[in-house]
Length: 318
Image (cartoon, rainbow, N blue to C red; front, side, top):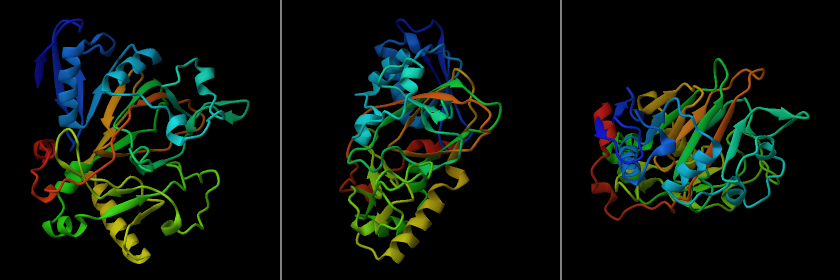
């Protein structure tokens, strides 16, 4: 796929190469620090179609990342999303970064981590699903990358929904999952939480399992995160069984794109329509990525959800 470049965009063509997976595309010929409104509109439409875009070799600063994220919507910081101070995360001071940027890193200073998520495995999740309005566009800039490991995997939740049997779609229609906030995606217990808590008694928003995208009008499975989750109205046994079935289905490799990072990569994904996870990597290696995100919407299931057509990206990949 190619489109003509415009305005301040580097002269030439924008080449879009779909990944050989159920989602994702690499965009060539674009300097993200120089795009104009017309070029961004083209990229935004391509992004909605592929769910995830990869821009290689960007000469990007943290401020460039902030400029880019503002094109997608209203930036929101981790501190505001968590509704608490994050003074323990000193990376913004260490790297002299604007507040809109969060640092995903295993770097330590004086023996203490300066950023988030370290070097261990990060389990499947969508970001901030425990909020009433999870984030929408999410992006990472690769600053320092280890020689191996730390790969990131993304699952197409449109595809996972479209591949469900008609019987399962009818079964989950109108159902919602409570998204509590007991552990983070590195499986660390949140301050004040306990694994002994009864999920049914813990506050948390209930998001529909069938979630209709506000821009594409297509359905997705919305699972959020496996731990601290409960299917409202079910017994614990029923909830666990259904969650296990849906998670196994949605994270099946046929729906997954695997990203191997290189310095200068900018990856932008639709947090509303995907899940993602990360491999562990050697703790002796440094890994530094800058993250940013924008405000999202409260997930909803359209009244005519069961009659909506499928998203086209999976049909292309199938």
